Amino acid sequence: MTRQIIRLTGEDRVEFLQGLVTNDVTRAPCWAAILTPQGKYLADFLIIPDGDALLIDVDAALAPDLLRRLTMYKLRSRVALEATDMPLARGTGPAPEGAIADPRHPALGWRLYGAEGDDGSDWDAIRVAHCIPETGIELIPNETFILEAGFERLHGVDFRKGCYVGQEVTARMKHKTELRKGITVLGIEGAAPVGTPITADGKEVGTLGTQSGGRAIAHVRHDRLAPQMQAGEARLTPA
Image (cartoon, rainbow, N blue to C red):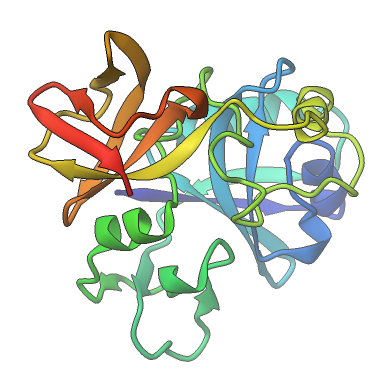
């Protein structure tokens, strides 16, 4: 997917982001999200230190709204925000000089800012193999809760950093005995569009996400998983 790099400068840049996003900006590079006050996902992005700036690497489709929201929160903070045309290269082979390891999972390889290219890795296969959600597919603005989307497992949330927008709801979900819903990998025969409802015995189990190599990411109710499930013309089974 196309990415947009937002450049954040100014002496308050770390403190400014720290009060808004799910992860500890002082430990960047990191993956983080910005949430609604009700704890629902709005956008996810990588935060990369770059000299006297922070780079915010976000899906291009979400960049205008993210930039607008960050500008709204700026108030008297001594920061400046700028959407750039900085290119991005990524791959899973030997990392070039200056590349950053993707902080979500080692299988996602490296990212190099200021260069352009892709080594042809099968990103969908990698994400399905490791149950890594994608913006706009498994991560839906104003719908997704990040703990159901694997943010804790993928180092996208820090429970010790203090307050941020949506923190109270996220913390309450963390301290539940068990999440009833979440993303998981299922076996799949056939294919169906992303977002197709998954059903079993007439009950809705969840929704279908990315598919690759006979497996699929799905957002499901764990207590409704069954030995045989359907999504459109596709048949699904627990992986």
